[in-house]
Amino acid sequence: MRIVLVGPPGAGKGTQAAYLAKNLAIPHISTGDLFRANISQGTPLGQKAQEYMRAGQLVPDEVTIGMAKDRMHQEDAGHGFLLDGFPRNLAQAKALDEILDTDGLKLDAVLDLEVPEDEVVKRIAGRRMCRQDSSHIFHVIYNPPAAEGVCDVCGGELYQREDDSEDTVRKRLEVYHSETEPIIDYYKAQGLVVTISALGKVAEVTERAMAALRRDAA
Image 1: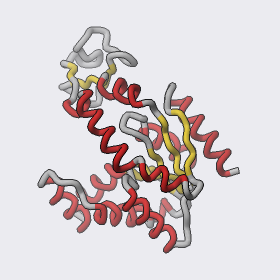
Image 2: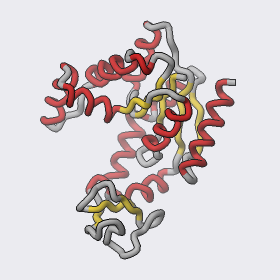
Image 3: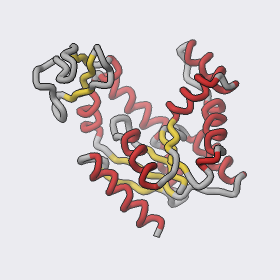
Image 4: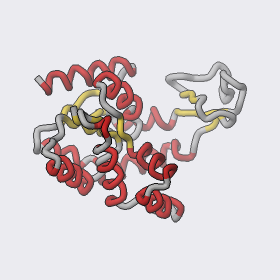
């Protein structure tokens, strides 16, 4: 299957992408991984991306599209893939269609993870990270530490990242609504969108997504 995963920040796309890709036996291709791999390998596209990132600028669409195209043509993606974070706007969505059409391929589904905006803010703004080890992550509501402000694992101080503040989250949502949400209507016109609720436990959302994809493929 060839699937695009969309949803607002805080919808759990990265988590669900990993589980879904494993269940479907296809590679999980995320924009973040594309950037890291190309930059670490020193590819021409990676060098271009790094120049923009060092200057504090957004990486242009053509660079991101080039990275995605190269990755989709790798051997392990021959039987399908799950795209996470790409396409993020209409220009990228149209470019993806052109890439697939050139190869005589098409998308099977666009999985839209739906989460109420207030829940997104609650999920992200409630996160607390450990200053000593950023892999130790807590949440003031869903996974609170035993002692407020103290990491259960190593005793380090817990803090809220600047990117996780409510004001920043709402700004990220505005960008999502203006740039990424239009691709949902674009794909709806092609009959590709499968919308599911991303509320509930991770395993419940995964099963909900798998059931929706099975129905869509039937």
